[in-house]
Length: 293
Image (cartoon, rainbow, N blue to C red; front, top):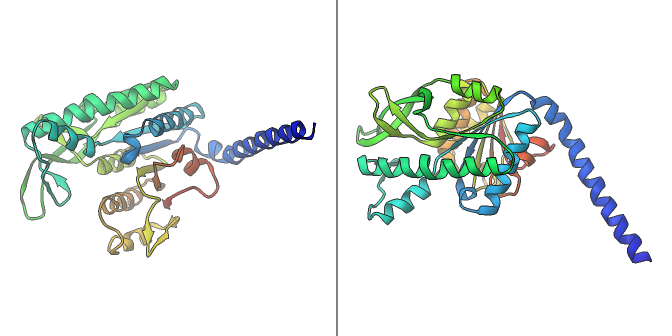
């Protein structure tokens, strides 16, 4: 009899704990309702089926509680994998992939044809209404060809010069969730590949979004081994010169700082390999990563 009672008490405690989680999230839901949150989808999250589904559930829940998520993605690892399949080696200069015509065709196929459609399908399978886009759709964003600091030609690699948010505003207002690949075009109509971190930054700025979230494979920004949970924009700027800020973290922190400078209220760099990372960062008091404001 006591065992049955103990089980009942355990179940009740679990239910109370869930209720407390909902209550903790309520002030944030109320505060963020009607706002835009741009999420850069990337890292190992893109290759683990269970995490993909958890991410899709998070995005759908955001929409249901009145928040407008806008998803931006790249897909560098997947592009490299497909290039190997056709016998091409990836060449990088200053962290940017040298992109000839054939590489650009593979990139567009992978980003827009494969990854984008997969994310859209996942979100829709969990009850959302996602729409797949690239920069080419309705001239969402245009770019100019990018060269290295040493003026080396990178091929079909671009840097955003203009964002037209008309389509995104329409989709957000009518209940849809935009999913955007980092492929755009120049004013001359050339297809260009762009850094997805920068695309997310520029879209967040243009939409005047409340938040920009970067999903990564690391806990957040660590300096001298310590996680930086709460950073001012100026402190983030200082850390750009710190030796601990390297690799993939450097462009993310640079884009984060620029986004804050240009009007985005808060940027979050969080570990996307944690289940329901987006919800934990947005709707809990402590969050799980680095917040820059």
